Length: 457
Image (cartoon, rainbow, N blue to C red; front, side):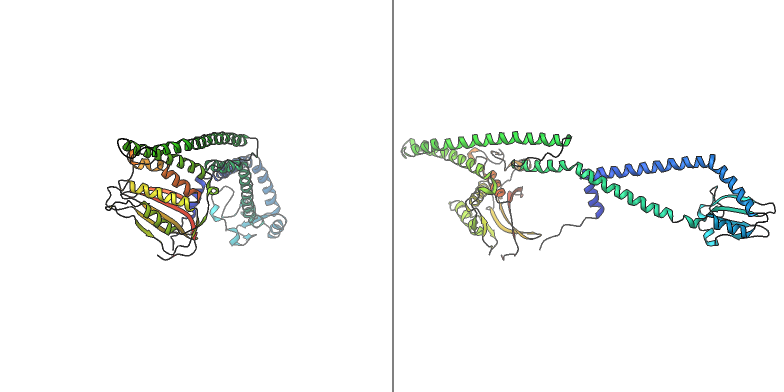
């Protein structure tokens, strides 16, 4: 029914999240800094301890080993060596012409053979120093591996757990520290959509708190300017309605014959454009309130499209009717009939205006687009004219924007038709998208109305 988004590997998602998350980058910097400090500290301590071993500890240990070797005796006594290994965490290896003995099994004595070459290791045994007795026996003394060989593993796991705990604490602190950025982002999105009712909360008095205060101040000033502009526009529009109505009434009283007739028709046409402009301005301000401006009712969208297309089709015999491709059995939808009629009429008028010399008439499609939870209702109106410049596409739905290459004042329109269509779509929770269809211009209205079941065609 619908295509699933391609599954990206985890490392791609992690790279994307790291590149777009300030918290993630700060925690990464913290981890890298912690590891760099730990490595530097460990390297420095190893160097310091190795120097201390050579300068101070090694002579002391050498003297102690002399005493242990003398205690074992010459010739070496296995009983004394065994008593020594039981009393102290050392290993003993005796080799010579008479006595050959190890305190540990051969498998344990040679398990660290890879470390041969160090001054303190010989034959794989962790040896401190060796001594040769007067009768030719060699005594190797070393630290017993069994007493400490598991400690590095435990220390490593404890260190890893400590690093993870510190990382979690650092992430929590950074998240709390940067929480005002989330508030500022949410507030900027609200202000951008025209919602100035809820200011950004001020949680702290640091630089981020000051930034939030400045953004609130800026939003308040912008809101005041927009309200002043809206009030002025509404006042002018309301005040113009009465004189326009009187002027149109007086013009219609002029005689329809003689030399006055052409001037009468031209004046009525200009007054009609001014009336439409005032009506569109008032409607745009009403729709600026969003969903609250709608009068919702059950609407058969397919039937409404047929009605608007029939009215919009030119009356001349040579004119081609608007082509329709509509989904059948579509259930009634909760829409504002008047505003949807306005939207469809504006889109069709715009398409017909630019299809005068086109080989095909405009096409209106009512279709369902697949969605993860069902299907979305979409309306597409396309003409087969020359289209518009790519640079003009992002501005077509702006108020009073009229690209010279697409249309002029004589072609009709005051630059509010597509702007009103966008407002109607947004008030219904949808969106209006414009693109060059080559040939022609295509306007796609996504109403964002989900249907669980798919109607037949």
